[in-house]
Length: 282
Image 1 (tube, rainbow, N blue to C red):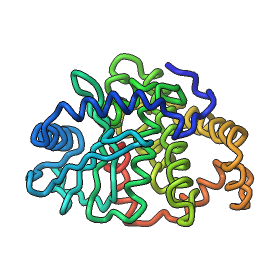
Image 2 (cartoon, rainbow, N blue to C red; image 1 turned 135 degrees about the horizontal axis):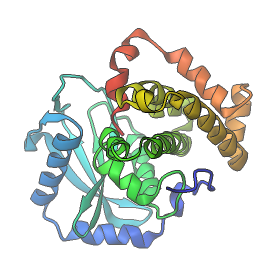
Image 3 (cartoon, rainbow, N blue to C red; image 1 turned 180 degrees about the vertical axis):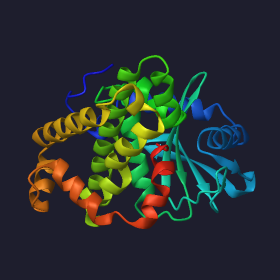
């Protein structure tokens, strides 16, 4: 377990030696081997039932000035889903755990816009950092190599209280990395509203607690989530100046209030239909 209120690190503070290690790993793999690993991971952990190799193109990409340190997997069309749910997403970040290291991968889908790649590359830098904020590197790899559901359930099976702490921390971490990625990649779209839509903290707590059985073992789980999330928002706001400025511009009293306002504003019937499925994905 890590210190949940440690100071957030900036996305570009990543030690470039980490990226060089990734670049060396990528250099030693053939294009065919890389594509196979990416496709198998997507099918196993993201619910993609079928992916044609012809539908995916793989490119090597620079990160923070380190040549060919990441992989970009571009999908020509959306893969079929095992549960027939349609996801109109633009991009996703994956950390594929290999025997010799981690493959940093960005998945790009047809709905991508011009800032999607930049946004997802910021996520890679956030997730690869050895510094601890909310989640350890090992926890981040567990989530972004597999998925949220598997990561939470693996802890829940042995210790529900620890699993609840994990769920809260990963939700807080997701809010932070979405705030930072939206702020530095495409602030004109509205950082708070975009980050709220991407991180979905309120849906995660409400639906995750029910879907994974927390309410049975921990009747006060929701109260704990609300309190700790509010504490996280207050702490983050006090530590990061641009977050304070965003809250002030929103005319909300706190970061939590601002996120709640955007959540309520965009809550629609169509979102309610897909909310449980979406919360299970990183």
